[in-house]
Amino acid sequence: MSTETPLEATLSDGAVDRPLGALARDIPGATAVFLRHRLDFCCGGKATLREAAQARGIDAEAVCAELAALQPPPGSPLPVQPAELVQFIIARFHDVHRRELPELVRLADKVERVHREHPEVPAGLAEHLRAMQQELLEHMQKEEGILFPMMARSPGMPLRPPIQRMREEHLDHGQALQELQALTHELQEPADACNTWASLYAGLRKLRDDLMEHIHIENNVLFPRFE
Image (tube, rainbow, N blue to C red; front, side, top):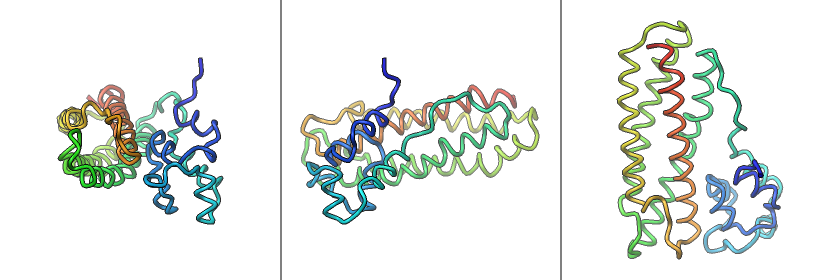
């Protein structure tokens, strides 16, 4: 049985010769890379990455390298020391949320605007994502500015009150994910979804998985050490 992730399989399967639209659908975050290079993955999504890059006069292999960089590092045992674990959480989850959420908001805005007459359009999704983004930014700032430094300085120090507050906010994030699922028909795009719509939902599925793992590691691995 293959242990490749979907992104690894996509890249190993000759990404430069795959259509831009397919890459945008299969690789969460690819739309931001394509926009940065002005590669049309929506209306021009049938062109391969090689063809589109050649037309723009850019290096297709360099774009492939940027797509590969979107892949999270392979799974490995979590750091044992609190100071190392909080740095892992920041790099693997906090920084990723900050990077990916603005693009998801942009895609949601476009889907709602272009497909406003579609019966399955996720009306209200962009507004919901903006609220999620703001709540996550505030939550992560509290952790990075107050709680995590305390944990790094004093391993084993009882920190129950601030941890309890973070746990309560995690419950709010979980509720927001449930609302996200409801707005998007359980994150299943319609059969006639355009590349932008499919890319949006691929990114949202990654957000859901990342956020659930993020909360799990904090609630069940990091926090108990200080309670």
